[in-house]
Image (cartoon, rainbow, N blue to C red):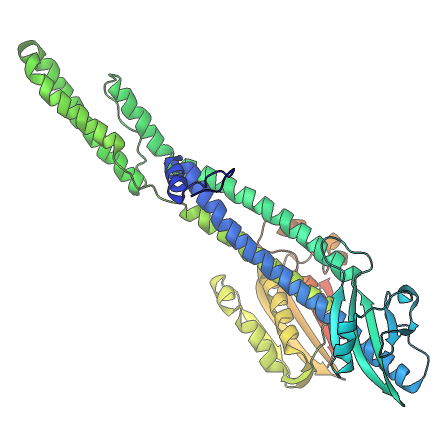
Length: 465
């Protein structure tokens, strides 16, 4: 039953029938596009959530600190604090009248009557004013608490601007959308080209069979001799069939003068067999190589995303939690990740860590050391030497490889994001490893330095411990 004036909905079976009528190449490309859309949507959602979480945490920390100083000033009667850039405040009485306010909010209360009642009951209220999309004017994040004064209770409302946070999230949405669209187009194109390449032999077989049907003689389908997949076996089967057809045709010519009327039946049977072969369902090797290639670029952002998110987390005020750590255990744990890779290349990791206990955050220092070792294995030669010691309250760690060392023009920008030497642009990596090491050093109030020695490249990490 349909409503008057409305078009009937297309049945699901009709959609399936239309999809089944599509060429196989288009169906495969559609399947790849749908799968990639799900993967890209999930990856984009994860990246967006991680970035939003980091930004919101920093904003909430600023808001809590500002609210604390505002409530203290209201309680003691002191001068109300200015707060972070773009912040404002209001002090309301129990009826919602504005007693004091910042310049940006003098004309209107920041709380509704219902919210005022909630705060009056002793609860803390936190909410956002203004939306991320569409863009709102003066977006704020508010926190309101009740402050007891002699003979009355007032409500202190602290507000910090969300402009930078919202702009960063909108920029991230745009970049994720563009990157996802380009990745989807690239994956669809690769899927299309791979599907065409996989089904190309089938089309060649079809054209060859069509030529045979038109009366050609001595035809054989081009079958690769160095493969043994489904399409190759199909080609061999068809060629054996063509051998039999050619032999039958020769017998036909020999007997046509004497028994042309007896050949009609076998010719009819042979033509039926050929038609059956042309219309028989065939199993094409599906897009295994394509799916492996797609799997490899994802894996790179989370890895980048993750690398970018780690850099964002460190750069956005991530609190370093220093704990006592055995220096030798820390360095060996980082080196253990790369022993197998070094062994495969016939190289050795030589660890020399002096006995000591250092106060660092192992969540970041261990991956930083691992990145230095990975960089030496990727771009250096020979054995990799890791030396670590703690003297005068400082952890000094160096990773040294052998020739060829850093290009001279690359040294000033070695720790920049996405910086890669010209000689390493064809090797795996995103150019974020050394940037993360620099961020970890900076978060520990330390430094990192790259140099060339007479034997190869050397990177020195120096942080207070």
